[in-house]
Structures are given as structure tokens and as C-alpha cells.
Amino acid sequence: MTRSFLLIHGMCCTGDVWANFRRFYEARGIAVFTPTLRPELRLRKKPPKALFALRFADYVADVEQELTRIEDQTGRRVTVIGHSMGGLLAQTLAERNRPNAAVFISPTPPAGVHDGQTRRFWRGFRVANALGLVPRGLYPYRAVTEAIALNQVPAAERAAIQAAMVQESRNVFADFPGHAIDETKIKIPVLTVAARRDRLVSARVTRLTGKKYAAVGGDFREYADHGHWLYGEPGWEKPAAEILEWVEANVPA
View 1: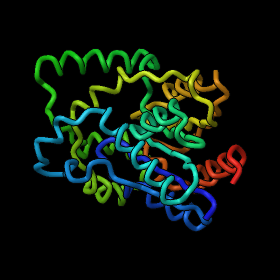
View 2 (view 1 turned 90 degrees about the horizontal axis):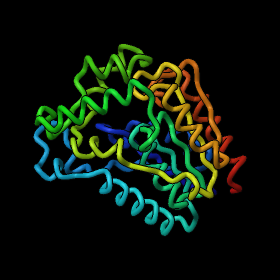
View 3 (view 1 turned 90 degrees about the vertical axis):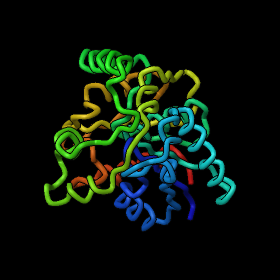
């Protein structure tokens, strides 16, 4: 094996969401790592109270530690691919130049990247949170998940995806809009990937994230037929292959 990939999942998910991408890359001789963040805390039912104390910074420390572990195990630097919340984690690692390249798929945008809709959402969330109306543990209800995250997934496959989801800390979610990234510090190749049918992290917002990194040489791609669950939707092989082609073009083996 000549490359190592660290794939970072999003909110309320586990590393299992990367099953398709993992098989695809392993079949091409790549060492693939798909850890689950804090699996002992992020449970579907009755999570321990420690979950509710988690902050986004805890996940940053976790993925950086995992990246170091992979480097020590393989003796080489790692390419990071993050989806949704994992995309914001990947951006943070890229700012620190820890991987040899980073890919952000429908990433949670960093501080300062927003449109009118996301600005209004976070304003409302802050008010609701201050009034104690937001539960400490967040769980995606089926109707909401199907409408905004799984809209491009075949209906017969949605129940299994929903059943595998776990609870998330409200504090982690609340940290997103304040998490800043200084793109001028990034010295590694980065690629931002948008999905035009994404209803959770809209392609419009992802284009703004891509624009932020284009200022320092970052690349951008958009897939017209995909939604938020890009790695589990029909046709996922194309973005998986093109991401690998981009890595091979930008990071010598």
C-alpha cells in the first residue's frame, strides 16, 4: 500500500457510513481508516451524561490524535477526507497542515461563510438555545433526515441508515458557526466538493466555502445529481474515483 486515507464522518453518524468509499479505495491498494468519534458516548439510546459536555474542540483533538496514530503505524503522511461536520474537522487539520492533502465533501462551513438562510438559522438556534429549548442530545428524526439528508438515497435503503444513527452533543453543534479557519495558513492541496441536490449543506454555501479556499489555490468540484449522502447514493463511484484522481494528481505516492 502506498497511500493512507483518513475518512471523517459527520454529525450523528459513525465511521460505517464510509463503507462504499472504503471498499473502493482498499480495492485500489489504499490503507483506509474510518474511525467513529467517541463511540462510547455517542449512542443511539440513553447516552451517558459525558456526551453532553463534548465540544467541537474535543473532536479536533481526537482526529489529530488518530492522524498521528496512522502516521506512526504506516510511516507516511495521510490524506484526509471529511463529510459534513467531518469536513469542518478536515478543514481544521488542513489549516494546521497535518495531512498531505484534504478533501471537504458538503462540509460544514467555517465562521464567516454563510448565506442569508444559514445566517437566519443560526440566529434562531442561538435564541432557542439561550431559552433552553434545544435538547442536550441531538438526534435526527426520520422525517427530517429523509427530507434533507437522504433525499437522493433510494427509499428502500433509508430505514437502515436511520437505524444506524446516533445522538450528538448540542454543544458540538453550537460550536460550528464560531469555528474560524485561516485559509492563508494552508500550504497543502485542498478540494471542496459540492452536491447540487444537498438540502442540508446547500451547494450555494459549499460554493462559498470553495471560494474561500480558491484564494489559496484550492480546487472545487460540484456534482449535479447528488445530495448530502453522496457516498451512499446511486452513482457514488464517480465522485469516489474523481477524488482519488485528484489526490493522485496532487500528492505523489
